[in-house]
Each structure stands twice: as structure tokens, then as C-alpha cells.
Amino acid sequence: MSEFLDIAAEKYHPGLSVDCVIFGFHENELKVLLLKMKHTSKWALPGGFVEKNEHIDLAAIRVLENRTGLKDIFLKQFYTFGDPDRHDHEMDLELFKQSGRDPVKDHWFLQRFITVGYYALIEFSKASPRPDDISDACEWKSVDELPDMILDHREIADKALDTLRFQINYQPIGHRLLPVKFTMPELQKLYETILGKELDRRNFQRKMLAYGILKDLGERRKGGAHKAPYLYSFDVKKYNAALKIGLKGSW
Amino acid sequence: MSEFLDIAAEKYHPGLSVDCVIFGFHENELKVLLLKMKHTSKWALPGGFVEKNEHIDLAAIRVLENRTGLKDIFLKQFYTFGDPDRHDHEMDLELFKQSGRDPVKDHWFLQRFITVGYYALIEFSKASPRPDDISDACEWKSVDELPDMILDHREIADKALDTLRFQINYQPIGHRLLPVKFTMPELQKLYETILGKELDRRNFQRKMLAYGILKDLGERRKGGAHKAPYLYSFDVKKYNAALKIGLKGSW
DNA sequence: TTAAAATGTGTATTAGTGACACAACCTACA
DNA sequence: TGTAGGTTGTGTCACTAATACACATTTTAA
Image 1 (cartoon, each protein chain N blue to C red):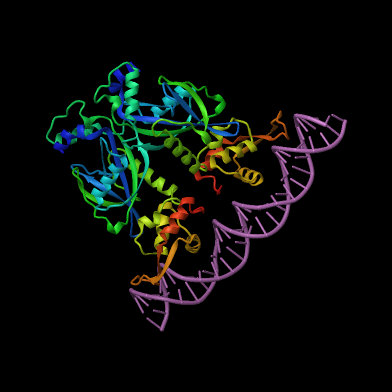
Image 2 (cartoon, each protein chain N blue to C red):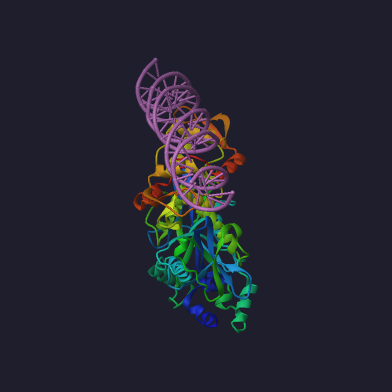
């Protein structure tokens, strides 16, 4: 951290960061990957700074790869947070102290920061969450019960979920959040979680199949406690074509 | 300009700007307010810098008020452009020269810039377009035939239009772009222009009236060359309530 | 063997969309 | 002054999509 404070001013774009809301779907719950900050009980979105000559999208990709160990992640910029009061001067000073330094007036790190928000969709089981330098844990948290978060990170997470909900018919949500093979009930649970409401089982299935974007694999998922459901995969070509014009329909 | 270059570094947030895509509707055309840059034939979106302790939204509002003379404008942030190559180093140097100075290495103005894009909806007839310091004209241009623009401003304008189209059922587009009283054909033309396709007159009217967001004023617009159409107004309360859940329907 | 819970499949009703026809109106111009 | 051309107001019909249900089947646990 101390070294970071030394080189930050020359390496990174001033007053600019990126934060990522990384969504995963597991055990019928939509989850977000959060970092537990050192020396406090608060959590934070994975984020980072933008190098002076780096595309902001690339900065977000760096963060994602470092936190999840994954490449080729689905990523969308969704909003930029530019309230001058969004930084927490107290916390900044605290971090300075912990690095064994005296706060330097006008230091790069102590200025006001703008942050660009990205949301990412990843396949839960493939990620290997890793803390970064300033956190001591990296865990999935259900969007229904997010812990106490630093700064405006709760607001950023909420806005990401709003965006996801709004764009549900235009983004490859199922394809990116579910494993390659999945069942119709699983797909429905995903939709229900994102939309925050229950859907009729039979109407959901009819509609999904009508889009023509699913491949029926013929197999069944065995081992469940009940009737074995069929497995499906996305027909990626048809799926992407359908998303371009939007999956029509009101949910 | 020269004075600006002197105070910029201390007054404004480094490497950050806002650009506004200001939409207006006139003579059945969707228009954007553009600035003709001095000493070149290119046009630019109205933009500005963000003061060190200023909310980015406020910076955009400043720009809007200065260019249009209007207050209380409808404004939405839609995307942040962070390609490191989006600035035009040649043009920067040119501006420096024109201010009668030698380019200073590492000057605030010559660094890489991120820009936050906003779109605004205003009532065409109420605006009084005014150029800023670095432009010599401020004019409405049809979105169908945008002139040559600096940097990535064409891309920004296109993205704003895409966003407008995407959000058409969730934003008070009619209410903000049309005068208080308007006719059904006018409202339809607005929708057609934004969507970029023709709509059936009768189905459009049926659908619009079904929303229950219009007040029939009983009056007719006289003076036209043909049958006098009825005048309508938005029932703002019902309109806003309907927008919250979205005007359902595919266009 | 059976109960409980989940999945697979089907149907009737209602609401919404898309395509289209005709009458009423206003002005311009013969 | 009266008629043609263009525009607006209103209505209908067929078709598609959405909603609300019912019943049989499969799987495990008791």
C-alpha cells in the first residue's frame, strides 16, 4: 500500500476509478462478489484505478480478472458516479496511517474521485474469488442481503441491479450466468430473482421455447429429490440474434 | 482561452469533461444542438469541465444553461467515454497556439481526457442557442444529417440517440420535447423520428389514448392546410406514474 | 406403498397488435 | 362557389400474445 501511494500519482489517471458489480447465480440466488476491507467490518465492490493511458474498459477487465481468475468476462459499463461527496475523507486518512505515513496535503490519493461503474455476469462455479491488497476476504453475497458497504458502493450495486433488470431482454443474462447445461426451472429462478417476482411455470416455459433460442439436450438432471427435469443449452447464434432486436415480451 | 489555460489546473478536475447531446424537436425533425468550432469547419457537442468539488451532473447543467438559456432542463447521464485515444493531440496543440502560447509539457489541458455523456430533452422553441468561447456558432442540426464533428463526438451523439430509442417507454420524451399543447400527428411524428420507422396512424392513436396519459383539450389547431386536428396535453401525474412501470408495448 | 413435491404438457379466456376502410374536414385553386 | 387533394377522426376484423388454470408423471422419503 505504501509503495502504491508513491507511484500512484505518476501511474494512474487522477481522480478516476472503476468499480465492478460482479453477478453470479448459485443455489437459486443472485449473488454479488464483495471484498471485506481490512481493519473495518465493511465490504466493498472490487475496484481499481485507471492507468494514464489505459482504456477505462480495460481497467475494469483488469479488476475482474484479478478478482475472479477468469478471462473473457461479459462486462458492461452502466453508470458513472460523480458526487464530490462520495469519497470518505476519514477513511482515506485512515488508510494513509495504516501504511505508516503521514497524510500529505494534496496527495493524489486524497483528492476527490469519480468512479465508473461496470457490471459483469459470470458463471458462478468457474470463479476463484481472491482478495486484493486492501481486503482480507472475497466472498459472494446475496443481493437480497447485502452487508454494510463503504462509500456509495451500496448505491452502485443497487443501480447495477436496476440496470440488469431493465436490460433483461437485451443482454445474454441466462447464457452468462448459468452453466452450459441447465434446466428450465433453473432458468426461471434466474429470471424471477432478477425481476424480483414470481412467474408462472407453464407460461414461462412456453415463452422461452417460443423464442427458439434453447436447445433441448434430451438428457435429464438426475439425483434431484424429485422428477428429473430436462437439460437445455442456449443456441448461442439464435440467442444473440434474438437479443439484438430484444426478446419481446413483458415480464 | 489563454486565461482559461492558466486557471484550469487549479479550478477543474483533471482529465475529466462532460458533453451534452441536446435534443429538440422542430418541423417534424429531431435535432441536436451543436457548436461550430473556431478556426475549423468541424462541429462539437456543447461540453465543459468539471470543477474540483462539483457534482458531474451540475457541470452538465451549467453547460446546458449556458448554451440554451434555459433552467430546469431534463437531463440524463448515459455513458462515459474513456478511450485513451479519444483526444486529438493535434487539435489541443492548435488551441494552445491560437491562445498565443507555447505548448507546455504535461499541461493540464494536454493530458488524456475522460468524458461523461449526458442527453437533454428541451422544448425547441424556448431555447436561445449561444456559442461558447471556443465556438463561433450554435445551431440545431437534424440527427439525420449531422455535420463533421470533432473527436468522438459523432459516436457520442449516436450513442445518445440509441439510448433515447431504448428508453422511449421509460422517459418523458413527449412531455419534454413537445410544447404544452400538441396534436396527435405531432406526437406520432416524434415517435417515428426517434424510432426511425413509420407507425400506423390509427393504431398509434388507439394505443396512446389507452395509456390514459393524455388530456384532450377539446380545442383544435387552426390555420393548417387541412382538417384541424385536436390538441392534447400530457396529464403529467398519470404520465409519470405510467413511465415508472414503463409504457408497455412494442413499437 | 404411499405421500409430498416438483416437473411435463395442455386449454380456455382475455387483452393487445397489425392491417385496413370510410367518413369528415380544411384549404387552395379553378 | 364548388370541387379536388390531402389530412384527420373513428371503427372493424383477424391474428397473436398474455393470463389463469388442471391434470398426469416422476422421484424420493417415510
